[in-house]
Every structure is written in structure tokens, then in C-alpha cells.
Image 1 (cartoon, rainbow, N blue to C red):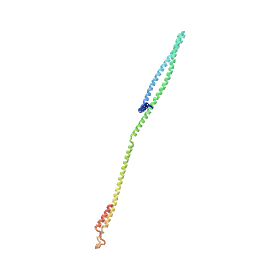
Image 2: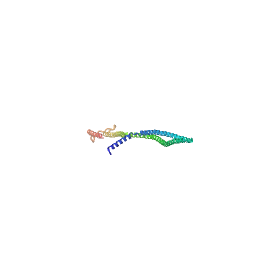
Image 3: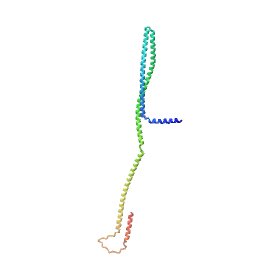
Length: 258
């Protein structure tokens, strides 16, 4: 393939693409109907002219027939009067009109056929235009629907669905986090209450044990009415203050470790 052929093909393809993009279906249909209506007007004019020519041919044919009849009567009249030469001239004139009549008859037949053909074409064209108008309205409705669908699809494609879903997911995650924090705070609050009650219970045990320990360390009480016996010699020596302080310190340490 030569260079010029390739260039021609590229230019043709680009021009075809531009034409296809520039074509508006609705406008193209409207233009097609306008062209058909213009053809209808021209066809009607052609039919009218052909019918007018047919009328003229009919008139000329009828006139020729009248002339033929007239010169036939003149020839008969001349023969009746004994003028054979005049009768011959009359017959010659009749022959002229007869030839003219024959030619007009052939033309008239042709014109009649043309008129009938043009009338049929006119009716067909009118029917096609009516059908084209109906199709145009149907196609216009389909074009409107197609444009609406195209716009809707464009809007759907323009929407950032993934971003919107990501936003919903982030909001859901935040809600879950808030619910988890609320649940954790509730559990901590419940645990604090349990701890406080456990401390109270534990504190009661320690207090009871401390009270019992104090009761053991106090000397026994003597009744008021019971006579005091003279002090006897103790069998065991009382603990010294250092030993008692040491035991108290050990007890405090044990309590601190609880």
C-alpha cells in the first residue's frame, strides 16, 4: 500500500469518526422528514404539471376529433354538390387532423400512464412520511430514555462508592470502639465496687482478729465483790516491754503485707 493510500485511509477514517460523533439521531430524523416533505412538494408539482399537460392533450385530441368530423361532413357536402375537387381537399384536411389526432392519442395514453404512476408514488410518499413521523416520535421517546439512562449511569459512575463505604466502615468502627470503652468502663466500675466490698470484708476480719488479740493480751478482770488474795509469787516472769514492742512491729508488718 502506497503512502498516499494510507494517508487517504487515515483521513477518511478520521472524517467518518467526526461525522459519527456530530450526528444527532433526533436532528437526523427531523432532517430526513424535512427532505421527504420537500420531495413530496416536488412530486405534487410534477403530478400537477403532468395532469395539466394531460388536460391540454385531451383538449387538443377532442379538437382534432371535431375537425375530423367537420371535414368529413364537408367532403360529403362537396360530393353531394358535385364538386369532387373540393371534396378531395376536404378529405386531405381530414387526413391531416387524423394524423394529428393519432399522435395526440398516443401522447395522451402515455401521459395517462405517467399520471397514474405519479399518483401512486405520491400516495406512497405521503404514507412513508406519515410512517416516518410516527417512527420519529417513537425514536425520540427512545432517545430521551437512552439519554436519561446514560446520565443516570454517568451519575452512578461519578459517585465514589468505595469512599462512601469506607466512611461507613470507619463510622461503624468508631461506634464499636465507643461501645467497647463503655463496656470496659462498666466492668471497671463493677470491679471497683467488688474490690471495695472485698476490702470491707477483709477489714472486718482484721479488726476482729485485732480485737481478739487485744482481748488475749489484757489481764483478766477481777470481780468487785471477790476479795483480793494476797499476791502470790508468780511462776513465770512477765514479758518485757521490748518483747511486746517487737511482736507489735511484726504484727504491723504482716498487716501491711496484706
